[in-house]
Image 1 (cartoon, rainbow, N blue to C red):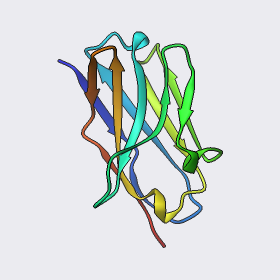
Image 2: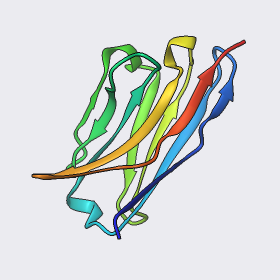
Image 3: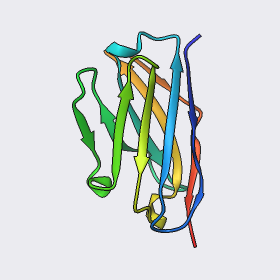
Image 4: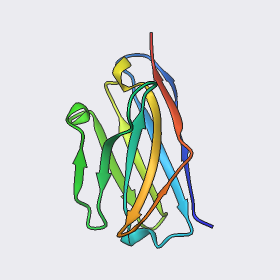
Length: 115
């Protein structure tokens, strides 16, 4: 019953922009912390940006000033606006939602930054 579905990934040139969206269902969205993680081939999964139920944001240093995370509690969605993309941003991006001992993941969406 719990579903997280990402969309918006694709191929973009360095310096370009993409907007990722995650639609959720089956959870009481407003009480969950939500966020975005990414995993590049051969590397560990890392936090990109997260936002709490109260709107507090934490981000990886590598994306500060370039990415913006937001949530819409009326639509049960979380988005990631990505600007000034570089090849180092290439990865599969995963949506995550968690509250206390519960955590859920989406299937991921590929972002490729290449010229």
